[in-house]
Image (cartoon, rainbow over all chains, first blue to last red; front, side, top):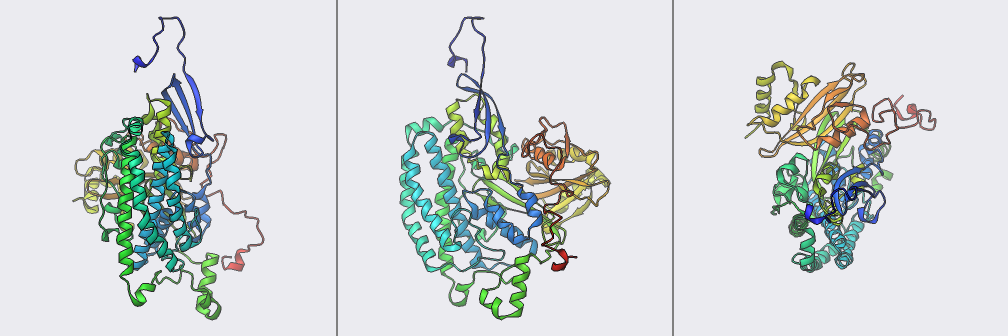
Length: 407
Length: 167
């Protein structure tokens, strides 16, 4: 390291370090969190991360909300892929309630979750490009994230904070336009992803900027609680979808891409490869969905009258449905007591929900295991001794999402 | 292949009656130990050649105000990645002396999670390298996720509990 510094005569000048505040609102942090960096010239001596700028006390809020009303809180965790959070929450509730979910719902959920994964990885990877000086890729792929958002819109009516699905299934069946848009996406996106990949993958400048920076060993990564693409980039093939399959992931064929060095370049490659796998999973799921015929093709929710809202026509004409409607809206249903931990493979890693119910109408305690909160601790170790400009790339390649950090 | 029964047997062999209350809610082995033993148990779970619970998934705390003398629970979720088995380990502490040994020496990931538990519940992790608030401002002098802080304004009259069958 010493050869990078100008040699001054001994005692001629006192060596000082500079303190630099990176964040909380800085365009390069892509979110609201602060880094107090101690710099020796352009090299990082130490870093102190401060989080909590957008802490919204979701865990406390959840203690006064019936299960169905907590979904909207989960939207705001990782806001680059809210459907995965929503589905994770529904699956947790369903595990607690012991609901049996029809296969078609599982497959539809997988389509939505994998779309969300693609949109998340797409943002992350293109932002890494932006921070390395390649703006074009980011602007180009944005229109394909738009296609994904349009599919969300057809399914649930919202784009960013989706609140997609309900406990037991979906609020309505996917319409034809949703499937048309999905087909359009599957038709057009692979070509674009290939182009995007060509732009970066063997790009000399990009490789020089990302290889060897922000690296972590598998052992340290595990000790730091890394999960998801960041852990897989170090060579550990841990994926919740494979280890603890949920929502019928066991019915699908896909690879778990891993890296070797755990540096920024490997993280980028792992995410890139995961997008290809996600496309393949969506294709498989779409095919499986099309195989349902007759009445089976209309199934979009489980039979769970206590938690799943009845159709509006029934509410106006039937006593039973009216009662359920009222009870669900007012949160009058007692949930069974129990303690459940359920996790899904979020775009950033293992997104866990630890739900304790004492038999009341709301959770007694709800804790979110937010992957980026846990792996952001390693940031100082990742950047120590590296250049300031590499720090920015490391930060974006970890895919830190302020909403998820703070909950 | 590691199973819940095997983990339980190993733990009982090692710690005898110190580890207790074995349950399996939704298939996950759950047990507790006295709070003084938390590091010993975690170390054993980590080091033992058969158990190898080397991945700390999650640390959090829960407040049970009715549970006199054991008001705060610290809950560890551990994962053995090679055998793919998860367990849940709890220690309970008195709320007036909420001192529990930190797991940061064993798992680096415990650092912020313990800070969060301190911030929300006031669990004092003894030996923690940097135990200060993480989400809330440092000037705060209470622990907001404890149950004595109800969320809704209790003076609200437009939402009479009796009207909703909760009276």
